[in-house]
Image 1: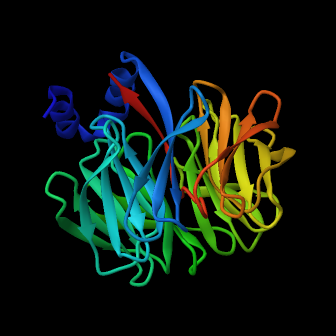
Image 2 (image 1 turned 30 degrees about the vertical axis):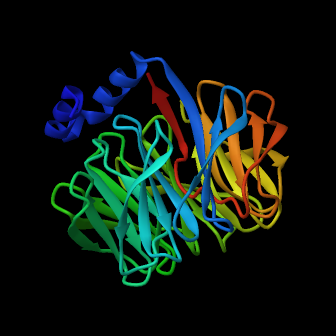
Length: 326
């Protein structure tokens, strides 16, 4: 095990700073990992060329994505096979598979990468796994139908969107206890932490809106109307812009997070779901389920500049951009 991984595991509260330090000193190549639910695969896209460079066969119906840039591991939730695929990002080979009793969708990792969190949609809980042993180490009762999840910037808190109870659960990761619930719009699903680390964005599918939450106070500070049937959200590096996929309108809403309003609406490929921002190129990547493609948006002009063909029913639920280092 690399020495910096040992240090990170021993210092969970400050891992965010260590992580940035490690990544910034390396020559990293950004890649997008797009789950294709209709053909049981992941398309690996080089963001330097905007081309698919590999296709990884997974278990049945892959949806969710979580990336460990330090150990170069990719975790993919497989709905129909009830499992999590663990993939080596350097070789694009499946290393192992975590068998589950549930059909997983939302997944995310702790800041150190030592814990994997899996949303248990049917039993209203979040399962916790040790990523070294791949054994379950805990379960935290949460709201109804947990879906999207994200870890706070300092790594101490897990935020969980509970679709059927219309709230966001706040979990203390160290104690594995639910410490708060924040009421939002109807059917919250995708979530993202702003680039400044101070704001949480929650997509409310049936309210056609996004809730902005102050993570220091755990309160909603704004509710912004977006397009029809929004699904996922991401932000740029400094958090001044948020980007929301609207599955019912085939668009992406661009939010000025300071003014707290939509400033642009961008047409993209059909039924956009997963979305992520690449800081290196200042581009937004959008997985489109209907058109089996990834739309590429220039964040400087708010224009779609290209489409990258992927596999059948591309979803990429979660933060799907990672980095390969030599």
